[in-house]
Amino acid sequence: MGQKIHPTGFRLGSQYTWRSRWFADDDATYKSFLLADVTLRRALQLRLKTAGLARMDIERSINKLKITLFVSRPGIVIGRGGSGLEDLKRYIEDLISQKPSGKADQIQEKSKLKVEISVEPVKEPNLNAYLVATNIADQIARRIPHKRVCLQAVDRVMSAGAKGVKVLLAGRIGGAEIHRKEKFQDGTVPLSTIREDIDYAQVPSLTKSGFVGVKVWICRKS
Image (cartoon, rainbow, N blue to C red):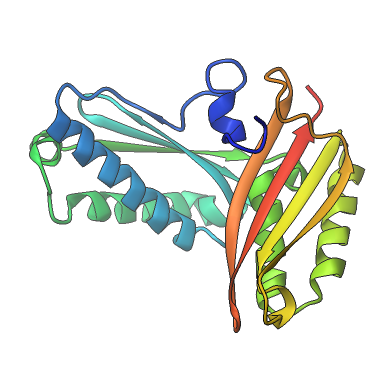
């Protein structure tokens, strides 16, 4: 069972909560909100990559949009005297106001949607699966030997206090002619235990031979 289900979705309600929290009263509103959330997440992932964006929570009410950013380097997002937050707020407002695609967007645009942004620091980046996977993917794209990259990442995660970590690579690793998988693991990662705090992320790495998939599971101490 542990290999067939998303570790985060498996623990929704007991360990984790939803990353997007809002209510839609009809199908058109639901589709519009969902598309807006996906567009917003993709845009902010690119814009805040240097800040180490690990997670983004979105909450919507009638005329307010609250975004919580979990980053490893909050100073880059906040900027000097809070100027970075003001620029980011204007960027989000411009992004939302572009091309209203449905009833929900038109309603929110008429009511002048208020945007609130809060920044939360990630205390230990080596215990965040997305940041670890992104670091591995970036180094593989720069043609650094994958075994050294993964073993160093596993060591850093275990040194940070994790109970276990597993890294899985899949694709034409190292420019090989044939697709294969390689796994690097240390400690225990009980995927079928709901009570365990397991962080999971998957990030593609674009190499000259094609995409190499990077998956990371981290079992953190509860």
